Length: 487
Image (cartoon, rainbow, N blue to C red; front, top):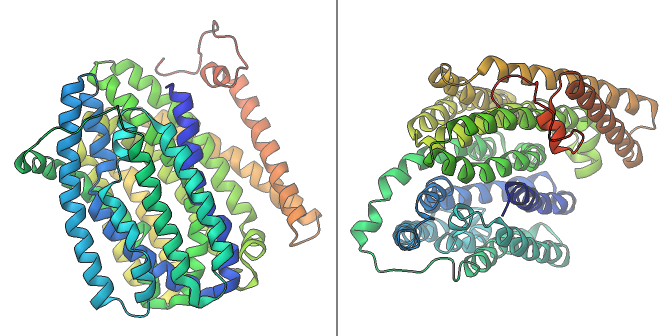
């Protein structure tokens, strides 16, 4: 399947998988209030840590292992069998620990913890890493979308009060399990199990664990924030942070989806020694990703004060103030993601990934410990921004002689300037229209999108960015690219 189709499927699914809980979030916020949202967030994020350990970084390691072997069916079968056996061993042990936590450690979140058990169980059969390594994104997208639509319907049917929070957790956990089972079934005929020894399976453990360190570190400032806010500042404050971060996380799905599609493709290019093509891909990806994240980041920051109370209810008005600085993380995540998925991971330079995200995690833990007791949720926001900013800086220290960072920075500044113009247009529109209404907000979004799109087109035409215009079918394929840098 082509990269464009894979990107469409993966972007659509990644965003949809976050968007559906976002659709149910206003309902949950009104039914359960700040404390209820905070309690569920606290329980879910503890559960998420266990699923991270169970999967042990396979979204990176498993994809890369399959890409290396996919041209040889016998080798592919052996790699798949050994990696999956290792996965089952780790996920099985993690599931036992989770059951112990739910039975003996969980406190007020105990009922929700038990309800979330299918999410840990799904790690035994989550074979998305193999499908992605084979460039088969369509089954993941279509089958999981159908399952999660059913889950959203169940939320509205069965969750009626704060006492039903465990039902909310059970619905989404079961959706995860069923989605994994359906996706795994689509591998029939593509790979086959072959007998492998436990020793052969465990040989994957060390390299997989190295990548897991980076995944774990990222989770510290993506997930542990909510646990720390709940523990240090209370569940109500965590509810405000959860709803602010939920929208930013939804938007970041665009970024991770692009990286997920490009990594197996670029890994295959590196395997074939096509470095010049890789450089061309990373240059074009950086331009497009920066264009996208600046639109999303400046856009959500410009409407956040009106969006939060309209979307979640008046009790969550302060979530809008938290969203404004959080929007900056979209730019930082996008920049780091392009470098990581298209340069570092395809070359198997995993130590750079580990060092960058471990540095970010350390910054985040220190900032959270100092700021959350004083500033509550805003302290976690500041810690997250600092952590996300640390990652690309550490990457730069390792790669400054290999990649054209000066040109990349030019892309960032260009699209930030266009984003600032868009944000001014949005705020002016909101001042001219009736306040705090959905029609006014939607009109402002349309104005912002039009201004941003027009400014980008003018810029691309003026700078002769023919590769971008060609993607939009606005330029003949025969015209040369005068954008500078790699082909």
